[in-house]
Length: 466
Image (tube, rainbow, N blue to C red; front, side, top):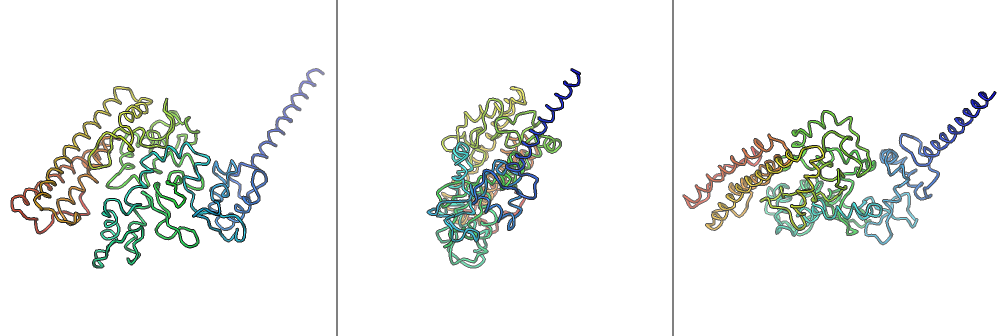
């Protein structure tokens, strides 16, 4: 009898626990956990206005709503209303058909200012980073570099030189020029660097000024597009932690970082085993064990060991490997000495101190080698300029065009290849090409000094091999 009562007690307890668990699971699915459900159930934690937005867009743009349902935002009941609604006084305030004649105003653009309401530390860190500094680049600011970048985008790449002498006017979208003159900028430059958003009479962004890259400037005064890395509307940690997120901009002949990564042993491990890694760990808990080799985010952003997560990608960098001459980072570009210490703290989570020190020294030596080439190239340039043996248009001058490739293409490849352990990019795509370019520059230099004139036919091939 005692045994029977005990069994009945166990069964009752199990049924009670099952009922409680089922009810909790049901409530979670019904109210917050929306992933995987085609029919959106909206009951708790959402205002009538938020429900209206979701239900309308579930019909008109179902792809957006389905992505949101699978996101952490959706699980937390953070809706379109929370991110897209702005004050009536906002320069970006407009109304879609669903909210006409109401006091609700929205913007299709979500700036970092909006994100900072929930992620203040991340945005503060970002604004100190090189990504935010892209907003000050000449892609966004036509006054930078005396308009040289504007001439490159519109007159040269935009083929305005084929149409006759069309002056480059001040402003983001020069008036009086055919739209195709601006196509190279709108489809290329601004999609990574960013853009200065301009608004039409309806307060919506006008063509060719939106969307833009990570350094975009918004009419509300803010800088930065978080969704460049945290793709809308899933906002997945996994997306941001995988190298493909960075590879959208960090690739190609002038900064082939994604190609360099895939050549490296780190990239090989990712390609072989990355499908089994865990990418959804919460910030500052994503550690070795979740992965067996780092991605871009591991080294430059994520918390690891004693280092906390940072959205300032300058913090762990020693050298400036982007500009014409590599120098120790300082000022707004970071602190190179601290950057080296921090990056070593990343490396020693998986490598010995000896291995880490050797790799860092190899990079230092590679930087010194590149700088010697660049210093010699500048010395020749100054001699030619003093003797008026350079053309006023750098893109039509063989020496200056080669000098550009030495820095902007081969020079970056050599330095980045050395930094991220990609021997082919450091050597054949890097220092070997630097040597070839420098040799050709030297021949042009010698000819001009000997004959005191500029050669009649440029030997430079703009499309290659550089």
